[in-house]
Structure formats: C-alpha cells, structure tokens
Amino acid sequence: MQTDEKKWICRRCGVPLVKKKTLFNYMERNFSEDLPCCPKCGKVFISPELCNGRMAEVEQMLEDK
Image (tube, rainbow, N blue to C red; front, side, top):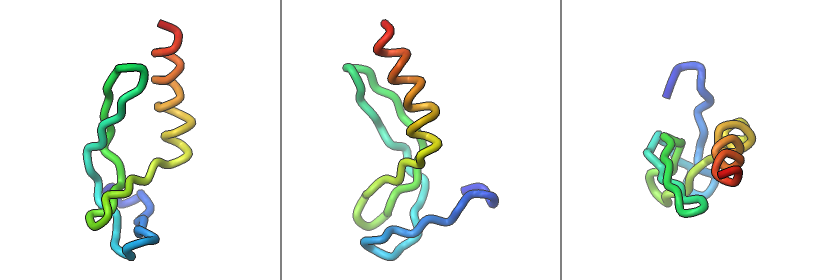
C-alpha cells in the first residue's frame, strides 16, 4: 500500500488487509482491480470512491453497449 493510504483492519479477523488482485464479472465481462483483502477470511474491501467512480463508469460503459 502507498504511505498515504489508510491501513484497514478486517473487523472479523482483526488483521491488516493486504492488496490482492480481485476479479469482477459484470454482464459477462471480466475486469480486475488490486483491492485490500483480508488474508485470513478473504473478504474484500471496496471503497465508496471505487464503487462510485471506476466501477460505476465500467458499469455504465457496459450497459451502453
């Protein structure tokens, strides 16, 4: 993680999240993003900025096709 990024902790496991390539599938299209993920339980954190930014743009682009 970059030094200016927040250090997220998994609420369930109590361990720091680590960046992991995460695959997404939407409307039969795949894309990936390196996201904070719990190394114990595998839960992925998707920030509001990512959800409302890049993911929303990809969703709109795919729906417009």
